[in-house]
Amino acid sequence: MATKRGKAGGNSSNTYLIPDNTGNCLIVDPGAPHDGALLRKIQNDGLKIKAILLTHGHFDHIGGLNEIIQAFGDLPVYISQEDVECFGDPRLNASFLDYEPRTFTLPKDLRTLTDGEKVEIGSFAFKAIATPFHTRGSMCFLFEEENILYSGDTLFRGAVGRYDLPGSCPRFLSDSLRKLLALDDAAIVYPGHGPKTSLGNERPWLREYI
Image 1 (spheres, rainbow, N blue to C red):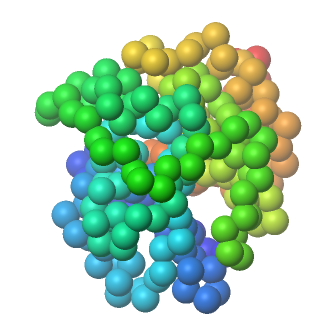
Image 2 (image 1 turned 30 degrees about the horizontal axis):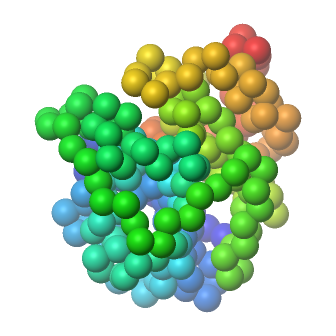
Image 3 (image 1 turned 60 degrees about the vertical axis):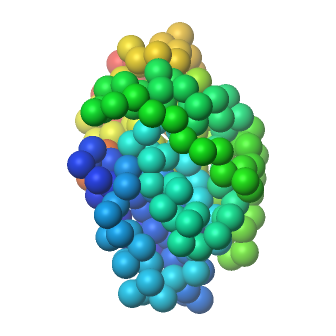
């Protein structure tokens, strides 16, 4: 399973395409509108989108969702139940930090996830790990067989996500990071912003938050 990373609009958030060897594909965090770049990438590579995974409900991670759904139909969209309210609240989706506060249309095929839930979508299988603090419903997605973690804005290379925004829950920071520290050091981490890393690279400084 190869991971292809793209930039989402002007907010430098990462959008990930996860194809299998048959051309089926998942999208993690379609981000801000891509001006057609993501659609062209999908079409040029002949990918068949099976589902969209959202690590959390901030505008720079969900803003390109409608673009994908308009192009490919009502795909299953996975997100934590706790972040569903972000779609309709400019404070909770943090769009007030951008040029204008805005709301987003709820996907028709919205599927909510709980902590520890295991999901299979065709040849894909992942585990949802609830890591609230950046938002109430922040989640990481662990592809256990490949030992790959999509961490959203929970964990970056050398940093954790902000926890001073509306809807942030700093009291859960330590507990959330403990869940990640329980994972394998070799796990490759694909964050919501910036370059990939490994859990082993981040472990030493993460202990400071526990």
